[in-house]
Length: 283
Length: 155
Image 1 (tube, helix red, strand yellow):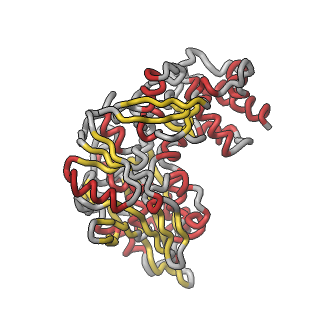
Image 2 (tube, chains in turn cyan, yellow; image 1 turned 180 degrees about the horizontal axis):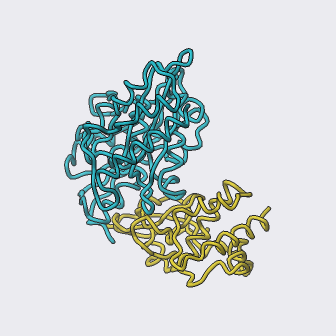
Image 3 (cartoon, chains in turn green, orange; image 1 turned 120 degrees about the horizontal axis):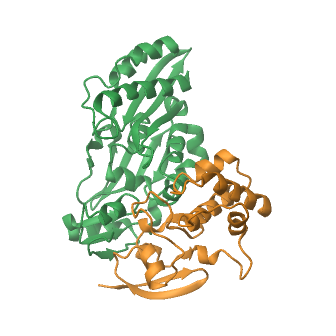
């Protein structure tokens, strides 16, 4: 398979990249590791005339451990994230999910920025970033803005990014719930994408849950947090009983995907199973 | 429009003009005639096109040649030291780690990445590490043994 023809640009700063986006607009696509975009180009699901390779932009790389948050540069690979000591300590589900993406080869080169810009609802990142209360840092010609992750994913391959914006970083807050978090997934056996991916993050005070965040990838075309599960858990003690009660009706009222891998009813059932797995691991 | 790339492959620098849409695997196979790197699924699933880019395993069907500009590639042809086989190559020979052999170059390149980061992997770690490499002869047991052979030899 060979992509359609395009012109290749390799800017060395975010400013240059944004200028290229402004010039070529609709006809351009951003490339980082290329592990979402190159397959799309090969299948000719998209045929941009311009590819803007941001992998050489130094300010978009690296993982910084700040006082109140951890900033993950958009060009960070899944492998770098999986092995990052600060993330392992402050948000274990983030490192854990990264270690479960694709395979060694994909984790070596695929990036978090590219993955969330692509916004495949069955990717692992959406569930984890929703549960983590992450912020997405977007740069544009006038400066930058931070979008709350709850406002970021808008549907199948759709995000809140403007046409002339670039994801430069993802911020994970250092919170009690992120410190006590996990991710489990029911992978499609060939692609390793999530038929169900469940991220759970819970904070406790005197044994009672003060905050519960439970989010899903793979279940709906728009990744989501399940507020019914979260409300049910809040104020209770995390144990077999409270988990069973909270997960009795996972994904109720949510439009659930159905395909040849997993029909709607099966997916909904497995969402409950994986929510119980995730929460039990934190109990 | 073709653009210039300079890519070092198995220690030798190649300066070529390529179309930006050329995939790295085609650069290796067609521009350099190094056909040890195979194309299996062409959809980033099977791992038979695995090479190393700057020392890390990569599915070369999932990267453009221009992305590798200025970088260093190792293919299966670069693993042996002259006549002396790499311990992984020797392991696949000794432990009958191949049947048809199509997946073997990719298996060896992925295994080299596994051993670089974890020189003494458990059987489970080897099996998990190979999740992105498919053997359609289903010869996985001997592939695992071959990698264990190499790990022992390299220790």
